Length: 126
Image 1: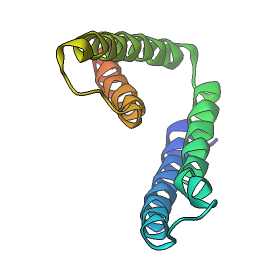
Image 2: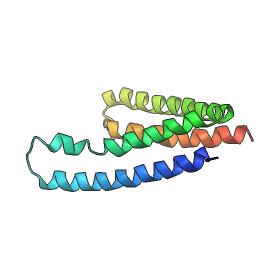
Image 3: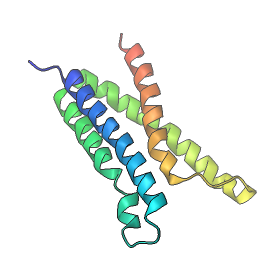
């Protein structure tokens, strides 16, 4: 029987290696192709391995037991709350001159808080 954690880790690592390669490659292309209608397409190429990573995670969630799902749901709720509070606070502070948060930071923030929430939830259920 295959372990869902091992399968997920392998798929996720592959997607992150591909993501890194695509980000570096698309960055190089964007610096060197000049003005072209293809620039937007090149700029969003990193979405392909990101979508693969999301698919790997969704497959993982479907394969884990109910207790693990509950732990991940609590981690997600923690992440949603923290990300929401931070982005809402920064949005309110924009009127006071605080620089605007780039949307490219929202997904990494969600993932980071998910990891923190996961550690908290796993500890609670030990």
